[in-house]
Amino acid sequence: MITHIGMLTLVESATDADRQAIADGLTGLVGQIDGLQRVEVGIDLGLNQGNGDVLFRLEFVSEDAWRAYAAHPAHKAVIAERIAPVLAAKAFVQVGEFQEAQS
Image (tube, rainbow, N blue to C red; front, side):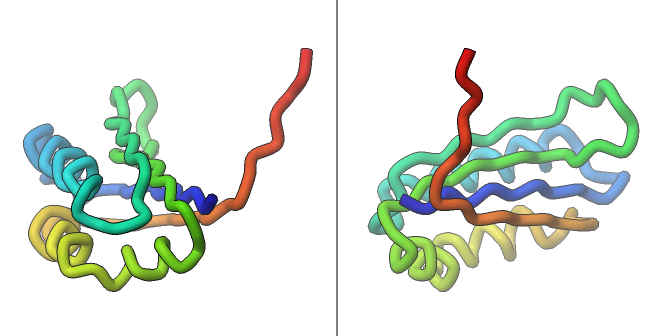
């Protein structure tokens, strides 16, 4: 399994509707892209200045599925129509597994 995590920082003029459109676009990819199993999206609560605006976590069955997602027309449409017009900065990481604290 590959987990793809991203954080988007939007331009100051971005609205709550812009943030929600990004969240809806990303969650709408489930069922459109083979190997994309799960999408979680969180919108920052605005509690601290300087935070990113949208955080997402996508889970793929394999590295090949993640690579296919990157080139998929539905993913590219979300970027072009919903993200790019309001994007100021982005950061991504892909991980195979997480370390977990034990109590």
